[in-house]
Image 1 (cartoon, rainbow, N blue to C red):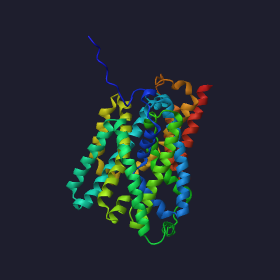
Image 2 (cartoon, rainbow, N blue to C red):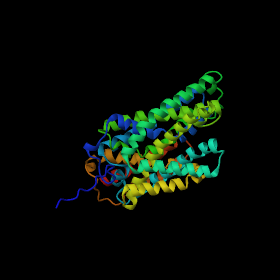
Image 3 (cartoon, rainbow, N blue to C red):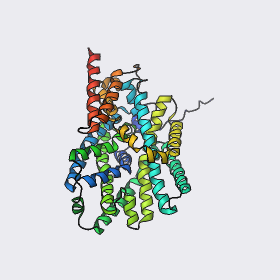
Image 4 (cartoon, rainbow, N blue to C red):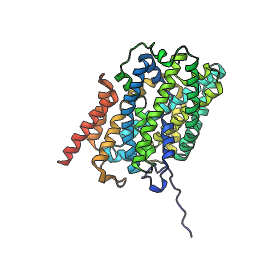
Length: 412
C-alpha cells in the first residue's frame, strides 16, 4: 500500500524556506514594492507638503528613507540568510514563549492596518458612487475584505500574482495622474511647496517618513525569506522601500497641494478619471493588505500553535468586521504601536549577527529571553514618551543597549 504524501506547506510557516523554494530577484522586488504601496503613507505626504518647502521635503525623504531602508534591509538580509519568518526568528531571540510578545504585537498591528485599509477603499468609493450610503459602505467593506483575505489565505503565490498585476498599474497610472495635476496647477510644484506653513523641520519630517511604515517594515523577514540570498533580500528591500514610500509621499503631497486632499484617488476624481481612481486605490491598498494579513496569520499561528491559513481567515474576519470602527477610532493607537515594533526588529538583527551559529535550524531550548522582552518594553516606552529626535530610532537605541547588556552578561 502506497504511503500518502503529506501536502507541502508552500509558505513554510513552521520551518525554514529551502533553497529550492527561493524566488527570483524580480519577484522579490515586486512583492516588496507592492508591500510599500500603502495609502496611509499618503497621509504623511500631505503632512510633509503642509510643513516643508520642496527642498525640505526631498531632504526629509532622503534622511528618513535611508534610515528606514537600512532598518528594513537588515531585516531582509536576516530573513533571506536564515529562511526564517519573523516569528521563527523571534523564537531564537526571545525564546519559544517570549516570541509570543513580538508575534502578538505584529499581528495586532497588522490586523488593525488591514481593517483601516479596507475602509480606506470602501468609504470613498461608496461616497462617490452611492452618495455615502451606509449599506453600500458595508457591502464594499465585505467585498474588499473577502478578496484581500483570499489572496493572503493562498499565501506567497497569491501575493506574487497580486504584486505583478498591481505594482506596474499603480506606479504608472498614479504617476501619470500626478503629472497631469501638476501641469494643470498654478506654477511649478516647487512654487506650490513654497506656500508651506513651515511647521516641520527636516528631522521632524524624516521621523514621519520612517514612522509611516516602520511597523509594516518589521515584518520584512516574512517575505524576504523567499529571496535567493542575503544580498538579494537586502537590495530588493532597500530599493523597494525607498522607491515605494517616496512615490506614496509624492502622491499625498500632490493631492494636498492641488486638491486639498491626502490621496491620489482624490486627484484622479478631480481630473475626471473615476474608473482609474477606483482601480489605483483598490490595487494600492490590496498590495499592502494581503501582506499585512499574511504576517498576522503567521504571528497568530505561532502564538496558538495552529496552521497559518485558519489564522489568516480569523484575522481577515476581525479586520473586516471592525474596519469602519478601526478607521474612525484606531489610527492614533496604531501610530503609537508603530513605535513599539522597531525595538523588536533591532533585537532580531542583533541576535542573528551575534549568534550566527545558532541559526542553522529553527530549534531552540530557550523559553524566555528576559533581556529581549525588557528591551522591547523599555524601547517602546521611550519611543512613545521621549519627544526628541526620531521616535523609532530612540526606541531601537534603547532596545539595542538592553539586549547587548544581556548578551554580555550571559557571556560572562
